[in-house]
Length: 82
Image 1 (cartoon, helix red, strand yellow):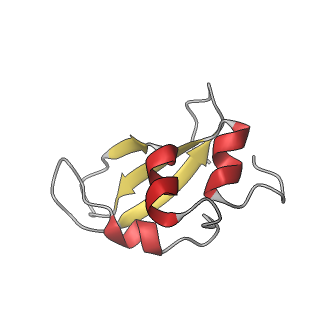
Image 2 (cartoon, rainbow, N blue to C red):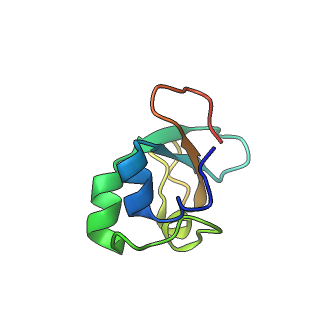
Image 3 (cartoon, rainbow, N blue to C red):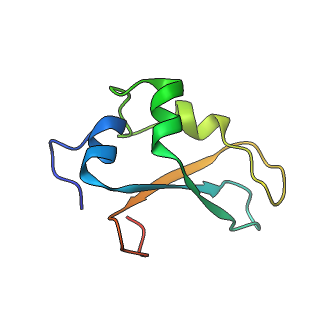
């Protein structure tokens, strides 16, 4: 689990964590791994993922097309999301 000092996209990248997008549609359940480098390019390295709403609101599901979802993180090599 990330420590108190891991709060930004740059921190996630430096620590080797992965970020997953989960569809917000009630019956979809789709999830995709996000490229943290691309997130940093778009939102900046200092963008906080704690209580994140800006990225989550822009997510579009590849399976069902629903807009909006939630983010989760997991450690490198760990399939279990946090």
